[in-house]
Image 1 (cartoon, one colour):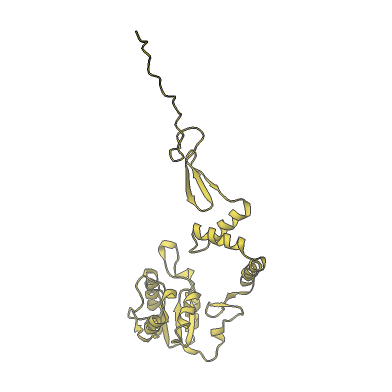
Image 2 (image 1 turned 180 degrees about the vertical axis):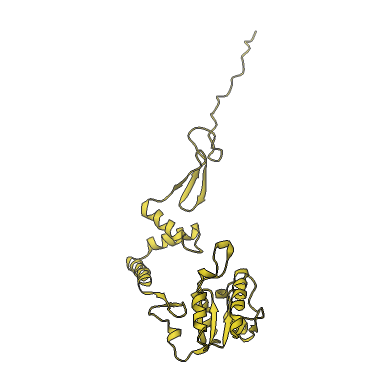
Length: 247
């Protein structure tokens, strides 16, 4: 008579903890939050991936406008791989621009002297002033070669949401320039967005009692856009088709 044997059980192999589950052993879930940091699932705190000055450089670059975490990391590694002479030249340019560049005492444009090159140019028409928000808008308009007057840079636009009011802009300086009666036309070239329109309307109402001709750039510019991104042809046509601003 044969002996009945019990079936043998296969040895159990312990399941390997998954890197994605984060539930067993010492394994933890790692979730990338932004370049240069990782987040651990157990505590939820972000930790830098790079040591010391590398992370410091990424953090500082990330504070620049328009530079996100990935761009900051890409620029940082470009600097690390660049020749030392190129890096020194970049550092020198940054220090020089802070030491030597100021804002024009007349119009508020960037300048290396007390007055900018446009305000020093005797060939410019003193009777027409174009009001813009930022110095970069001056550059955009100059590329069109359609305007031969002077500029006035406000330093921004009225924005209650951001806490910017009329007193925060260079409006008093503009009124002082208009006081002598030499200016006959004021072109309001603020950005064609909500803040720019509010600023243009505010200025037009304030200047109307002076009897000046106040014009606004034509509507060829995209609504909600920024002046600096407009191409030369569109911006040039906007100047040609500027309209009287009735308030």
